[in-house]
Amino acid sequence: MNYEGVLTKMQTENGSPIQYYLIFENDFLNMNQLLDKKLSIKFLGYQCLNCKLQKKIYRQGFCYDCFFLIPQAADWVMRPELSTAHLDKEDRDLEYEKKVQLQPHIVYLANSSNVKVGVTRKAQIPTRWIDQGAHEAIEIVEVPNRYLAGITEVALKEHVSDKTNWRTMLKNEIEDEDLVDWRNRLKQYIPEEAQPYFIERNTETNLEFPVLRFPKKLKSLNLEKSPSYEGVLKGIKGQYLLFEDDTVFNVRGSEGYVVGLTIN
Image (cartoon, rainbow, N blue to C red; front, side):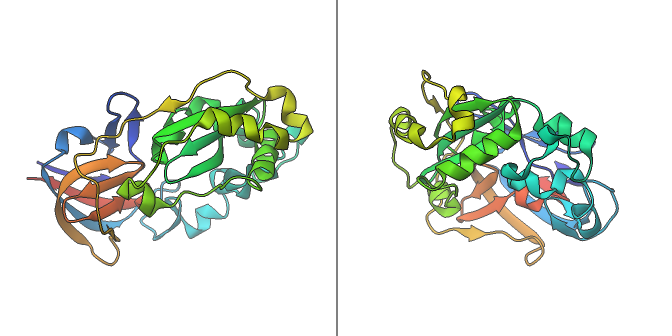
């Protein structure tokens, strides 16, 4: 079977295990069904996810020009504490910024390689945790806008990591943590403005990824340097495909790449 299209991050459906779907313009694949099958990936070019032009991807699936113009790639996306829509202040597109920033947001703890703090829209739970490859996670605070979530994250990351070690996550070299205990210990560091939104009573969510075998010595596939690859799919975790020869491929990190995919 042959498929061709522009890569975007895999869509997911929580379950036991999580279901992964690769979506192309005219086709979609349930990636779980491809476990233990040989896949061939061929790099064919670029297509910016915003302007749709065949221009080299700069970051996040966007070409250079779009990355510095569109609101989807503004600084507040990666640094929510920079959000200003609650002040009626525009960054790049106030209508878009109000739509995204002025909705319930969650500050959470997730354990993928270690316990880390993060921020996401409430509507993105548990998708955000799945994308990060977290095997357990818990909500700490639910606030009405992105700014409050951002300043809470900034305060908490003085006491807990805000980064994931992707190599540790993919090797599954992880230990279970008591996230309820972590949540309670971190409460004292939540900013005063966000204290009323602390979640007193909840339990952690556990996530199961479709992996037959975890890699031992990681080899990251870069399609620009290696435009053709073939391997047996052994697992999916986060937004990575894990292959039998320890090659790992970050689908989300390759958004905007046009690929040909052959299933043998």
